[in-house]
Length: 129
Image (cartoon, rainbow, N blue to C red):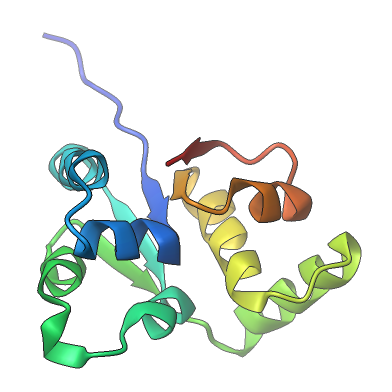
């Protein structure tokens, strides 16, 4: 049997909010991604959705899964995000961090914000929900 390549996915805030709200399609997508490979969530995205702490049970489970990586928004990443925003004429550093995470992990982004992400990177691989 041959090796199977699974592509990583990056979740944006809208994907996590949909997951938390019980959106069946998003739940299946995220669970499939967790089962198949690596799920990446930029730290700034966590900050966008983590409003009620412990009441975010589905998000907490996804973040706690061994297949999930939370990408830090450290100074070097923040600088790259700022440059990307400057080049694209946008100002959402968190959206830029989603694009950067997708590039770094060769990942597909699961997003509810495809138009804004496409402004940052028109060639970004996305699955819009």
